[in-house]
Length: 351
Ligand code: QUE
Figure 1 (spheres, protein in one colour):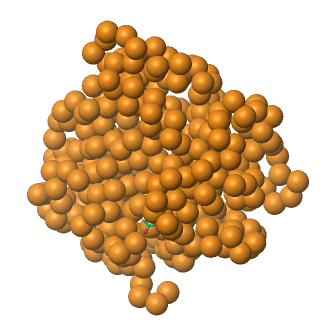
Figure 2 (cartoon, rainbow, N blue to C red):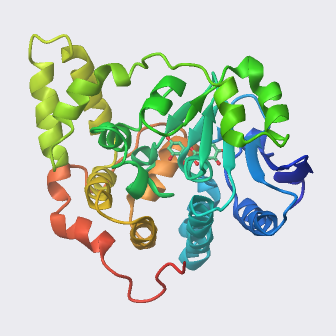
């Protein structure tokens, strides 16, 4: 690494990880995946370290996801195997965090999307500060909600996970706690004091309880009843039909339903159908099955069209005018969805 993209230090009883790529919104690179996984393994066996804290440098982001632009370049250059290595190494890191035997505390005070959620939400403790903005926006870039979303989305209350996957909408700190993305809510003014508290020997739960504040109702949670009703369907088309009829009604959710339907219609049809299938599949699957399934999906998606078109429109040309292929939901067959979930001929995810 040229400048260290990720920093490690021990302070008191804590191993502290600091994401240090603020100009790239701390997007997770392959080097960061390797360094973090190795450091977690070291600290697991280090008796002086009783807890791990992960935080980020920069004002705007905890972590805006994976290094999607590099993966786009590799795929475009025909180097699919090299691209796949990123996810082959990232997903086992997410598993290691989920199975970590010491408290793993993510301090989130900014954007946490995609891969950034992967290195936070699977930890035992996740603190949402004032500037928190959680999202799984992969349907916007022709990708799919990965890093364990197959596991955590169906475990959100009601249909919040389905809503999160299909709209890519941002959850603020209040909605993040309600959805289970975060476990605690702490004001940003107390960030430094919380870090100091967590480096001592007082138990992590006791420190977090002392700093935590009650959570108000967030804008998404305020729509829980209608989200649960309209997003319960098992096809994207049926969800859109339900949103459209709500939009045509006299209800005070009509305007919201129209906007939400328009948001979903702008996303990759293939990504939408994959996402809904993941959320339904993951409800009854264990974590490692979910991660293996995601590796199957990504192994197919990098040979498709929409990932490149999505990244082009959002991150390369920034015209936000993707031309998806297929263009319409009706042209994404069940067989095409099933093909993404099917066992790999070779090279299943090694866990
Ligand atoms: C949807 C996404 C991502 C996104 C934008 C979307 C995503 C991602 C990034 C991103 C942002 C800034 C960076 C970077 C990546 O943006 O997954 O490297 O510097 O990683 O609409 O899924």
